[in-house]
Image 1 (cartoon, rainbow, N blue to C red):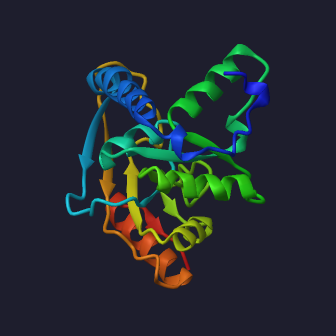
Image 2 (cartoon, rainbow, N blue to C red):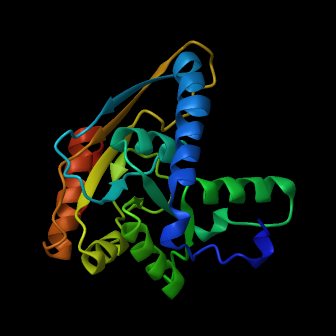
Length: 222
């Protein structure tokens, strides 16, 4: 994989395949969950068992670098990730290692200031492949236990692709625990789908209310 020649915002349906899913399974069930569950954290996953067998936009609040892995588990379905373009870098071996693994996990880049055509096309390819798409409506990591500053970009992708939105609430990872065997509780709860047919203001309102209720965070969305 020659990273210098890759457009990190451009992915095709064929890129989201069985190898992507196997790598997600390997990263989550072999590397991440067994180690962190045994040593550092007690994960409490609450799934919505009534989700229809169709793609959704999965929309969690964002509190840590671990969120991608635990969101995958609470949904339990093939998933792609829209990630800030700053994660995709070349140069040092560490930057390239991170970039390669983000790509293998099904990630693609977005310019949060101005969404490019490549990103818009990639979203369509995600749903064409039958994958779900994870987008963090608050953008960067927020550890203040407040639901606010919601970017409505996820609603644009829901409406243009006619897919409903599943809110996911994360709490307990505001601070990392590196003390072995003092297992810090982390809650990951999937909410009730929100129809893409609602108007933008109502979607934001329902998303904020669900995530606030499920996480226990203060809702400052107005």
